[in-house]
Image 1: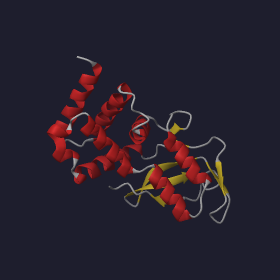
Image 2: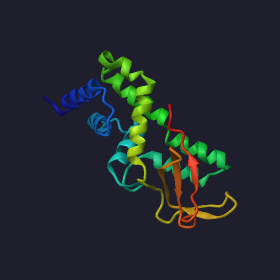
Image 3: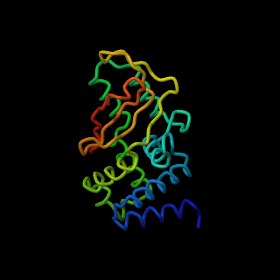
Image 4: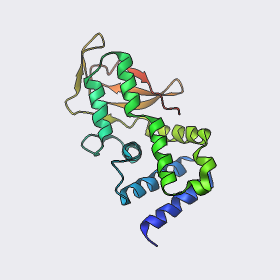
Length: 194
């Protein structure tokens, strides 16, 4: 049996279990990531690769992973027109909806829908999946720049070194990481739900 066949079998068993534990979500993502790597599809599925990398590292940076998602986020920080525009750009870069679309595409591509279509198209399943996944990457920073990105458009100038997801009032929220704002929390609503 080839590695690819073994991974496809593992993904199928994972979907069979319908169990959305932390371990099952992590294992499923790991197996999907391996499948993408085997078939050299990383550029086609950048959000899957980004979230899978985020799952397995205590922090990630532009230097630690090769992925345009971080460049998109840096661009959002460097080209802020308004606070609304900033939040919109970050949410677009981290789009959970697009992430789920990419996962579904992979599952259809490898014919998992033949057996699991009701699960693949179940929004409640994906909402629970995302909730588990995002809670696993809480407090794992995304480092954008070692020198920081200077922001001048929020009534004060400050430098941003990155961001992380946190639980705030029972919601996943984006926390901006900045030395100047260390004692003040700069939080933005993250729109993770599909």
